[in-house]
Length: 123
View 1 (cartoon, rainbow, N blue to C red):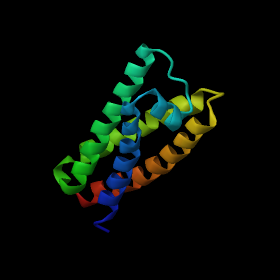
View 2 (view 1 turned 90 degrees about the vertical axis):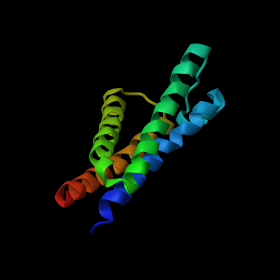
View 3 (view 1 turned 120 degrees about the horizontal axis):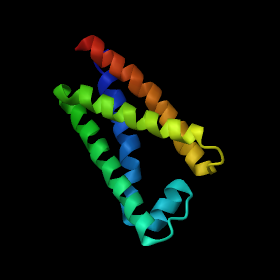
């Protein structure tokens, strides 16, 4: 059972690291999310978002091997996933790629919650 928390963190890390590709520019952001990132202002904001996800994902990956950091990594990751899902499901009319991201995040949220519970029981 000692593998549940690290596995969950690793899955959450991958989910948060994938958007890091968006730092490469508008074309990559469009491929990830199916949105037109027109204008430099929106590109800067979305690319910065990609960097922040990269930082979160890297921290979660680090916490896989540093148990003292797992609580913070789980809390930050679960908050990120829950916030996106709350926004996505409260905003009708988003596109199919964002709906796919939401489905992936639901899985990551459930796995993360199970992993966090396992971590707390083992702590």
